[in-house]
Length: 408
Image (cartoon, rainbow, N blue to C red; front, top):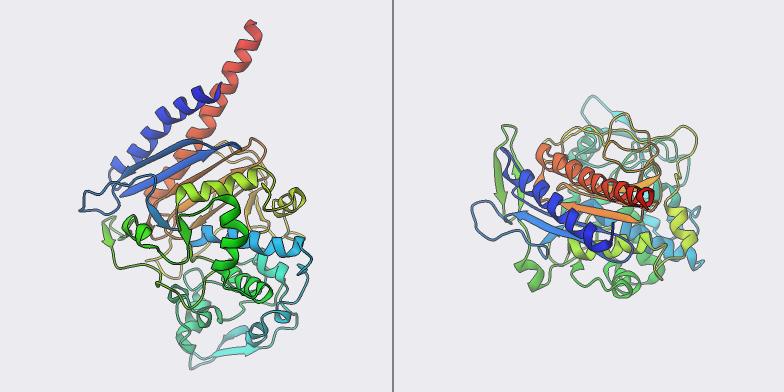
């Protein structure tokens, strides 16, 4: 199937997927979705509105809070330092960010609800942070982390402060995989080595080289005008817009784990860089290293439990599919039901943003909504339908080419 025919087929199919995701009962307020190959976007679409109750449509240049889809970009900023020989993955983090030595391991709570703590026996390394094996958690994915924060008045990570990531280790560093504030600490390593704010480092070393302009830890006036409102879905399914809910302007700390705002088209430039083996930003060997399972032994990725139902549901990506972790992507070790082959990359953001990067087929996609809690039933279903439609269209094109070769 020629590129033009592929673009036409994707538009016809995915436009309907997005319309269904918005239009069905209990649907998503608004969506932006894009697909890219190595050369450029082959699908761009949007549906719905930026805020329920208002008529402003969701458009392809709508700006979204990226939340944890920020992480992979910060991972690249760290791996650039590895390439340059400025850091090693097995370096102890306290060599660059001494404050991490203050973090203790949680061994439970006493009768008064106060945490029982001990010093870790092992130094946290940069690699542990990149692989989420350091011991950190998130307040909305860990009852223990949340209880510790409440006992010690540790602020929420949504405050975008350094104090918010000085929480606690839930286990001895290196012994388990657990999703948490690790990449925020990676950002502090990058700042320490470069001697600049994380946003300035990323602009110089990633955004400018890739032509990414509509992205940053603070919203420009133009971005503010195009920002989509985050909505909350109650347990009865009702959606409520929360126009005042956004990350702090000019934050105290550029949060490497979740702090970026961008339009989806800017993120596609990042995905294309990975598809093109670094695109001048990384060396091909570094991209290959990032795309490999870094977990040792029998460590694998499974689902998550919520400790704050307003921010996250219980869930798991593709139950039954074996999953591992690289620097800093989830890797599906088996093919997914949507059609993605084994060994590819994906991750997501708390407001129900999802992307995947298929280096085998040279395509990637991004599906962005702005809805809490995470793994919202309508948003996640829309993403699965979106990815499935992409692979079904690619398969149809391959089948047509094969038939043409046979007939010829």
